[in-house]
Image (cartoon, rainbow, N blue to C red):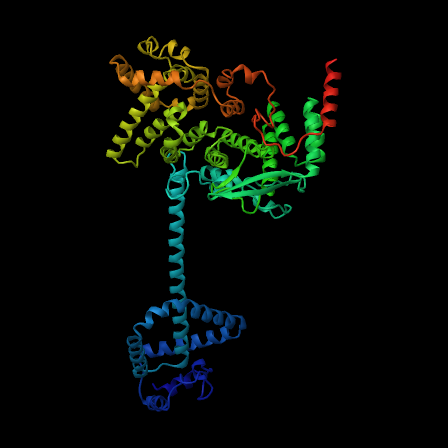
Length: 619
């Protein structure tokens, strides 16, 4: 049956067929030769496959008409073409190198299309749409593969973060990049939420905070603290930071108080001397961002076991300080210096220290370590709060063993860190933990374990008075051979100087929880037996260390006493000398330096009123 007969059977005469989109496109309609061939086809009977192709082409043409009726799809196609043009720019460049080959391929493809038997215009349009869909699918697949690759990269990064800062494996963050300064501080590690998200996940930490952030009032973006909606509206309290000088790549800053702030400071001193916390509360209601009032009231709240309010007041003080920072002052570079001799700068040291201790008690030792490095970097030479007595504990708590070892190696030459009991024992403990990690190779394990044994034995020989108090706090009954030996017996503790006893008591009271692990206690037992063997064999190191203990540790400097007072460790505070315990210690300025640099003094009228008030109360 001819094609004309088929059209008659369908009730269509010539010229009544559905408009074909292919005919509307110039250069894609049937050529005269093809029309002539179509006329000659009347006598030829087509196969069933030809009938099916004609029917499918008619259906596709109808669908195409329906699609053209929606103008938004034309916009979508235009956008797709624009996206193709932009995305293909990168892919065209490598193809331009083989331009001749691509042209030959395209020419051969065109000749093949011309030689091929042409189908109807509807079939051609259907093929075009199918090709477009295939290209879109290919693009989607490629973008999906890219997204999957990016997702794999993100998962790998998260795994490395969990491995580096998790609860089981040691971190590489502090000591991974040797080109950075040893006291380099990272902004993201100053936020405790960063550490809590690693442990519990973002959803558990943030909770319902995300929608609420849209409604909160505007605050200046800060790194150390996040302002809260419950805080009073912030207005500059009168504190500013000034750059004093730049020398040898270091910038020396200082905080300054305005005239109004100085008057508030005088009222605060009167409130402290009145011994009534309500006066400080009244002062804070009028001046909600007065630093010393926030620090003093935080101590009062902590004594009353209101830890949440105490922490909130410290965070408010840090926020007030950070809003007053000089534009050049950098927390991360480790090149900014603050002189503790100036009273205006001491409050920043104390606020950072107290905030660090709150973070450690909250279960964020990694964030607390970052604040410890920040405080130490402000004045590493003087170290007014003696952060070197604490940084080893926070490094062990946060499993930053490589950072502790790097600090020890870099500073041992000019600071003699091995003469501090905390570094002598903590460095040995860091080597031991590194030797117990699963990813460490067997040869490296043996080397680290051997070095840890030698370091712990040397620490026990240098500071024999550490063992018995440590075992006592760990609730471990020592062996009779150890307790009855003269080297570790009561004579080792009684023979210590007061300064050495203060250091030993501080270390034992702070880090005894790190020695309670079963594997650590077994390792300690092995090293104690080896030390007793060396003592009985009259190792020359034993006598050398005994002479060092007698010559050194005659008196502790003021910064160690200040650190012991701030630590509030009862084992250490009981060893403070009488000249420290007999004087009044203020929480906003404990043990001020004797050579303080005073920028302004309290007027005589204020001091006279205070003296008169004390005389009336005393009578």
